[in-house]
Image 1 (cartoon, rainbow, N blue to C red):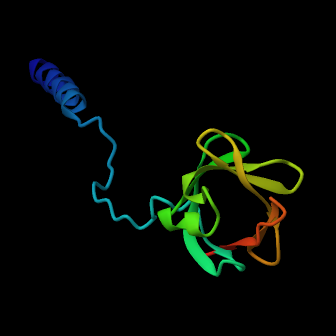
Image 2: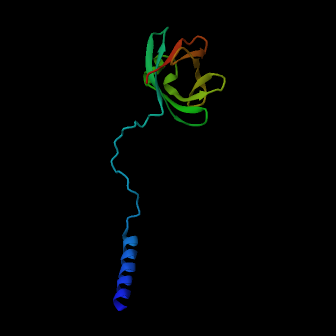
Image 3: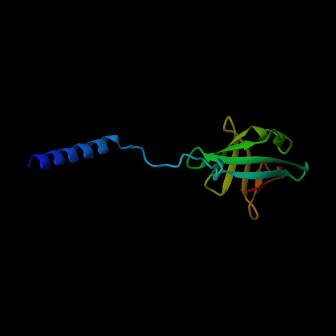
Length: 135
């Protein structure tokens, strides 16, 4: 009886030590492979002005709100359309148009879906600017 009691106590102590000493962190692979690019949610565009015969690159990035995303344009985009390098926001208006806004919230261009993966400027009326998806 004494041997059975000691064996039972030893089993309880072993089980308790095993439970306490157990690592509580989940098994996660610590290697980061970068197999999914950080900007995977964004879209790149080649912006062209057919009259000025200029082009530049821009990117629509992470969501800011339900209808707006971040927008950044290369510095040479000012040659495509004045002030375009200062664009900060891409805002869907709900009527099929999109405003490209500067840091003050002023519309630089208003575009609509064009042919295929392109957007065409409709405001100002003299803007012969197109955005073609580069992804």
